[in-house]
Image 1: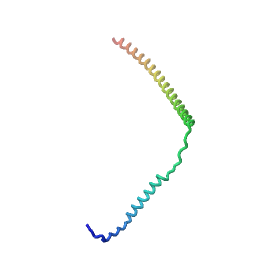
Image 2 (image 1 turned 180 degrees about the vertical axis):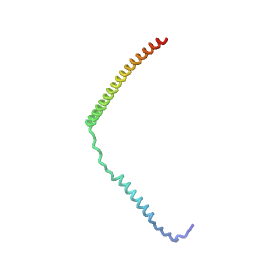
Image 3 (image 1 turned 45 degrees about the horizontal axis):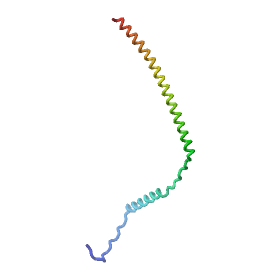
Image 4 (image 1 turned 90 degrees about the vertical axis):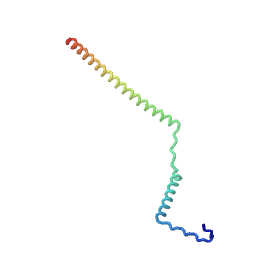
Length: 108
């Protein structure tokens, strides 16, 4: 340890070009970050009154109800069509079974 109080103070090192670039980059990043935090005074959206909100809510509910009813009608139509097709198939199967039973009777 050097106890001499009059010792020479070492001279500061010179900053290289890369050092200056790093300092400039850090400073510009800090500036842009501060600008983003402080500078954004965005306009707030207009508030919706209770009456407007209720009207829009009722309109949305009516649209959903209409779509729901339309889907139910389509499902009901498909169900009726499926039942009619199955009924025709049952008739054909019954005719085939009776014909097969007659053939079976003849072969005995």
